[in-house]
Image (cartoon, rainbow, N blue to C red; front, side, top):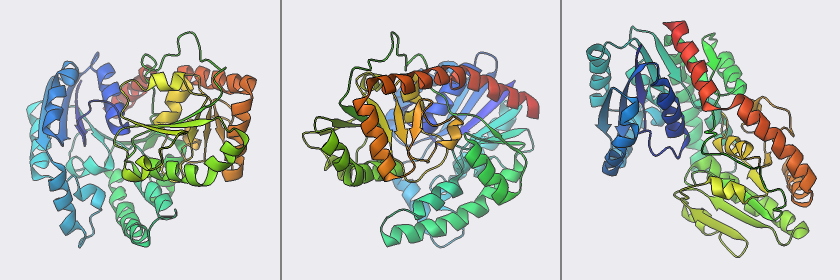
Length: 392
């Protein structure tokens, strides 16, 4: 089958959610299908990675969209009804290229990644899938409810209304995919649709391989991972350090916090001290999981599921999280991940794990087993293959 993938970002290196998913899906789907890719790239040096993804695709078509141009795209959108999230990726060249690729490569099915790219594929008259990382309207709703500057919250509220309207485009797709039951229910209720199914996020069990098992004698290292210019991650870390960290330190004076991820913003860099380490980009993040006691995920807004949580589960590292993203895992609290009910409970759960190696092992091993049973990219790719056949 000839399948066209339309992506908003060049899918390599796979160090962020949208790149990670399309990279892992296509490298496996390519074994049984002819794949084609049309995608934006933001920086010229991304072209150096073409050789890394070329084996998966028969042809790759690229559109250069530098950040400055994306920002300019958003200026007229401020005075229109178009969401900034779509305006940022606006390109007449992309529109022409997608239409050309569908015809030229005799495409059977189109896989569109992200609501941002739906503006280029919703009109197509062939079987098509829209793969959403999360329900954008739910994400912005939660973001608008957090403690942020007034102007930011006002912009978010405007964007929520625009996104809710733009999301109605999901009705034009044969199938819409989300990664959690929470997002599915939210979109179905909001837009009165029945074409939504779940495609879980996955974890690369070769990269995140615990081998002989996690060392549960490590008792003084908390870990947070993620892109550190991503708003939910920045908010989560600042909230944790400001509101929760002092109480944890009081009971565990020797504990240290490692914050790992590329592009840390200034507000994150300023947190570094003798007991808080900011690593920046880490080539092999699995090594940090091996050296950690507990992964913390204190997110206050967002949607979908969190890759950091899946990676920790695959490494046998116990996780403490908020409700954000937990429902999408479809597990019970304690099965690799403990969901804290509030800030006091978050502190208590972290402190219990720091002081109880048997509890760490019990929670961590459950997560390891579930990661292998449900979240391998191989099984998730098989599920996507089933959906493709279903609509074709």
